[in-house]
Length: 409
Image (cartoon, rainbow, N blue to C red; front, side, top):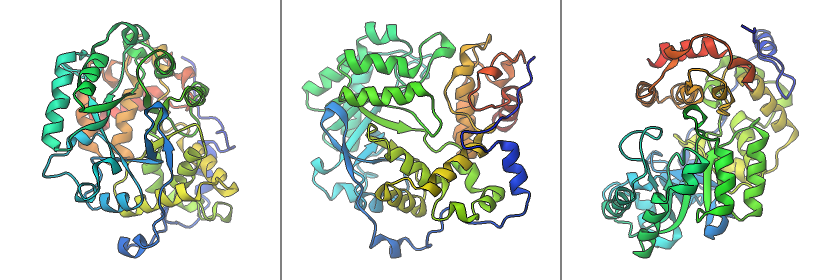
């Protein structure tokens, strides 16, 4: 088996160099550095810019909100101009945010997410009638009148399925005719572990040959060229794009005293990993928006201000390179290249995505539930090592699968 060790990052930092530098004894520094009182900060909270969401024609906020955000954070998010809400079907008439309810319905955009039925996103199937009824029921349950965007969650397994299975599109067309939805979008994952295709391959096709108007997909600093190319091509085709799973390793970095110590160096002054990442995302004018998990006032203010600041400075670039070095050998890019060569077809990228839920989002119960639902988990690994030369993040995948199984199994 070929040995595989972390090498240097794009910014010149290897994980070994990172650990050596942090061992030098630098002092800790808060990653946010924001005042504790949200009330004090709300007075000068900037308003988010809006971008055209492709051929939907919707003007949506650069940061996308989500129905699982704290009820305390949502009013301030609305004040900051967040006007697009992911997975809005999770609300009910009773839990629908008052901050939205007090506005005219056209002032905010709601998305309903539709999953496969009869199993999870890999084993379930598309069913026109059940998808149609799910959305009808969601409109009644939420009392919102209609959803602006009907989104197929997790997406198609393959190009072939996208070309030949019309169930999702037919359900959408029926609902649109009744005025219950307006636009069609997709949240696309990779499916090479079940013999399917990569997200960028499927989305490249959909952006040119289908009634889909926009898409959501994995995208973070250091991502593969194919994803960058997709975003540029989508813009040229007036196809909307929302980045998800953007904050790779951020939760771990924010709680790591070694990382905080390194950030005390003056060359990172005025920057944090999260603000630098948001600025980097927003610096891509081809990208419509990003959905970023937001669990506190501090996260909201930091992200909104980063969007408003917009320009990625020299210190921000240094911070991103430092973060890339921290992540190298530690956190997955979710590129799924390793899965392509796995003889056991283990969903390695899925397993390491669940690790993110546990260690970066601090959602251990969710991560355990997702992991336990897998057909094949980390114990299916036969330690052949074929995956490791394909890892763009220089992760020791064999060791990592064991670690994640101990954490989530």
